Length: 311
Image (cartoon, rainbow, N blue to C red; front, side, top):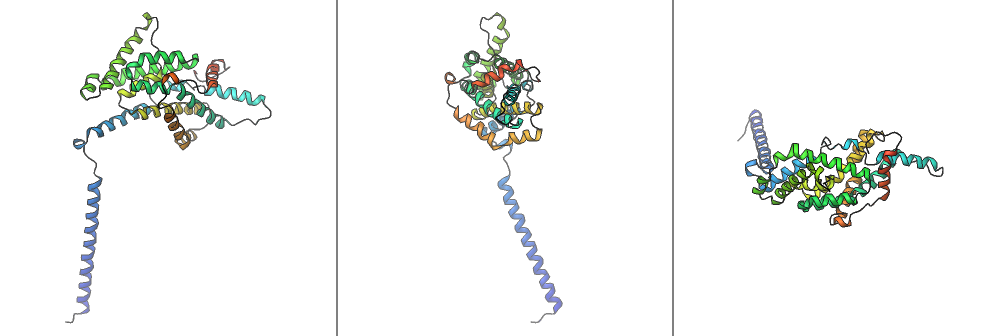
């Protein structure tokens, strides 16, 4: 059977059109199959663990917010004093070159994180694990803090965190609701926190009133907010690092972009993670100042001729 050139061309066009339609259909089918595997579960099909994970992430972001009103912007954690004393020491020593401000910041940040981890992190972990000991932990932390300036800063930020709980978070986490959901530890922590707040308000009539230090309160409140313990400990140290770096920006040690680069560095991340691992099982009786000079730098801050931070 012979066909004309025109008919042959029409058949070729028809075959090509069918092949194109088949190829498009296969692509659409593959896209549909891929989308079906990637569609997230709706709220009605989420498991309880998924809901709890979303809740802990939400509260973690709340505490990680740099706008959290703890008054940390007023403190340099000893950075301002360290820079002033380092300048004077370098100026008197003609044999050593004067280090840059950025190099001094990196050295201080490393020492400051070690100091905080040694003195405060065990109290964060202990308060999280056993909120009923809040009053005792607060008293022990106060007794073990030898530097008056550091003690005052810790109390100021701790009371600010307690105010954030009372004014912003408490209404969203009633103790009975948590108990009904099986969160018995968190419910007990709320009751203990309410009792502690009452003692703090009536402290004028107590011979040994509570102090409301930041570290134990951080542990109890992160327990109530269902933030995992590792995340609570990591965030405690990260927030301190962010406060120090923020103070360095305001002291003109580095710029905002350089500050973000320092916060994002793997060196800082690994350093914080290593400290959390190091002190994970450290009991409060074994806590202590790992950098004794830190108390001197913090304590001498008030002796500076001019300063821009409270401490």
